Length: 374
Image 1 (cartoon, rainbow, N blue to C red):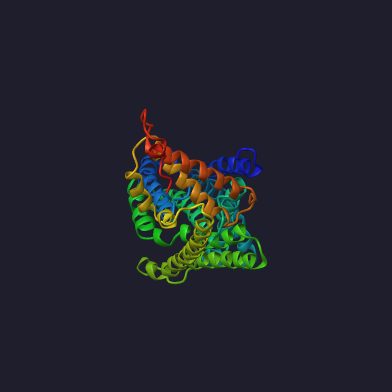
Image 2: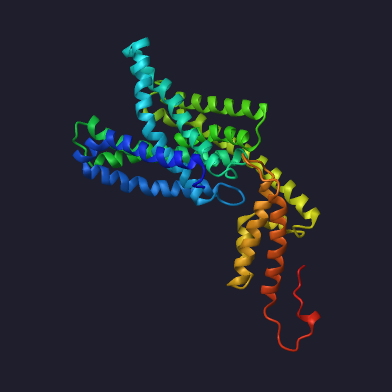
């Protein structure tokens, strides 16, 4: 991972974005430390819960935590920090060309969707360049896009805690954290940055999983849709807190529909690949159904003795899942990966059968002591 240039791009851009953001927020943090601490204390658990929830939305197995944190880190640090000067420069251009009054009304709805959606979505591309097998289709793109958007959303909410204090004349202090938490997390988190970038990420995942003219067009269309949803949210249309659910409903609906379509496509491909490996004899009959459900795999582990047998079973199921997903695509497919995984599965299955049978007792008949591999 560290040998890839994309990793060092991520490693440089995240601290750079953090530095830019801290420069913008440092005066308010120094002036109102209680509000900053309260905001961090409220938003940190939301970030943890959000990462857990998005990862659990994968129907078969959650996205690796390390990959998820790469996406969150890019969105919350690199994308957010660089979006601050980018938005300011874009709105300055709008003010000069269309006037200050137009910029005050429509500037955010024009600049933010372009700058922020491109920057957040770049996190999915960077992750795919760091770990080519991380994004193999629209479901992966949706998940990592949602995580990048979630990181951006949490950092932006922290900025809004500080801005709320300034807008109220510095009189609310720590109460601003609770006000912002109620308005932007409880009231507005359902249709915020995570949903917009998830839509764009699903299209990008199609392109990264299998590049073609059709997937390129789909990725471009999904990016435009994400930008359009963002522009709708930032526009002055339907103002007022009472209309926020009506304004946010199309964003949430688009994210849910993108997820349902990506999930369905993933499961169809999963079942087809599992059936092919069963026909090859790599998977045993019935294993495809066990692999498709986390709760069945958990229940299966409870029926296996602790220690080496349970560890071998976990490794076997992980190798089988990797084999099934291996054919889904990715930036750098390895043509030898499938054969290597099939050989690994065969070895793990034999070792598991031996471990479950236990040590052979002295004097036991060889046929009786042979483990049952069926």
